[in-house]
Image 1 (cartoon, helix red, strand yellow):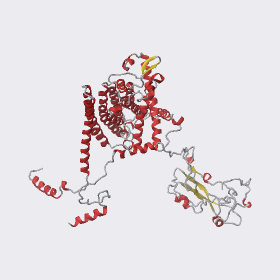
Image 2 (image 1 turned 120 degrees about the horizontal axis):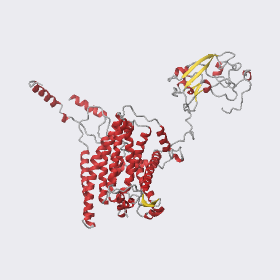
Image 3 (image 1 turned 90 degrees about the horizontal axis):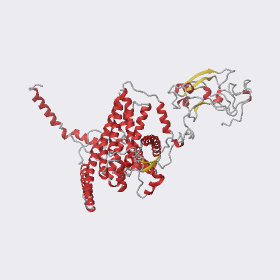
Image 4 (image 1 turned 60 degrees about the vertical axis):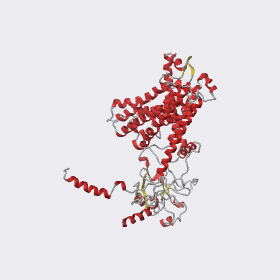
Length: 415
Length: 223
């Protein structure tokens, strides 16, 4: 029985229960994620992090949330009131919605009903996630616009430009997954990986592009230009306070968890155990698979934290150049390769033909990049020594020092 | 623009261009090192990863108080002579030296009934506003009698502005062994010059006044 058929048998009350569970999982994992991030980031910076509220500071984010809710809720006089209120609701709701199609376990028994921990299984599940996260951008843009202030507007515009740019790369990286799984349904993709091999191995370039663009998509460091503290105060949520700010905060973290969950689903075999540990999937009546799932999600979440601890924020032009001139062309080419390989396989070509085709492509890519490197090196070759500029410059490698340039310049004056 | 003017202007422009052709400006290309290899660039990730397993540098402050440096500039203290008389003579030099205008001093006359410090004058009112103080230590340098010094105490936070204006009682050094609570007469046979030279090393029984009912406890170990 496929997951879709399994989920089709769910009675109404079970769907409500599962929706509630998904909601609770999202909120609780946000609380945990904030705490984990602060602790791990602190460890990476030789600090301790929050450790005073509850055991090991576990209740820190909960108390922060309570504090946020009790704060004064300010709506600026210049704000468009209705849009100002709707914006955080859109942002938060859309993030929760994308979690609906993520399969968290295999077949399990919940309150006597045989089902799977997945709210619904759409035939176009991944497309649905992309669509819903795109709507989430409205929340950010509208928040920036309705605040009636400059910095939020700039932050909102940056954020929308950023998310739209990186969503293209993200969507393109997923095309290869669709081609390999012959489906857009999340559960089918998981099963396809279980039957063959995890997509992270066969579609490694797609995986890399997805991981990069998911960081860009969630506005996280080093791509956190939308809320660049040093430049834009707080970005789109500068004017927000109290619960509305908490909603944006929640949206950001649920979004991170959602893209991490999608990455685990599409590339790391979803809820299935790693190869060789398949026997664990039967433990606890199938519920053990949820542990594998969250281990994988946390792996991605750790990457988020690690990036934030290691990298400075990118410049906006570098960021856009990287998205449009590197990620998108590379993923387009990669789709071309994957599609060709797939067709060759389906036409019944032997393994040798497929392999030699793949090897040929690798050789071509290597040849092209080496030519590029050569031309780069040529352009970087030291220039013939000419006249030094007639103004004081700090000494740089390959340039005569300040005094020498002075001497040359006085020589020029005599001519 | 009229037609008659145009050729003229073009002529002048051509002349100028001949002298400063923008394409022939000499410049020199600097051989910048350029971005490092991928391995070099990913070194930073190793740094942050390794840091997770290092000992952290945090001091759990309210629970653990790390000692300050020996000469840390903390709260001020108004010192006493060994017999208990105050060293402060109310000269206001500290207040004048203060760049933050944090010190307020009012001098008072010493009388035979009210001898607070050796000599003629004592500080009657002495206030330091710790909301203004920048702990530069210029007041300590200005003090001619070494009455004002600084302690290592740094926990100077409170809930109101009034509480952070420290009065003379808050700043005075505690009475140590052998000291008597002023006001009391100066050491017999000594004048203020002897005091300043450090020739008074303890209190004399005759310095005890009637107001001091009980003798000063010598069990005070703060020495």
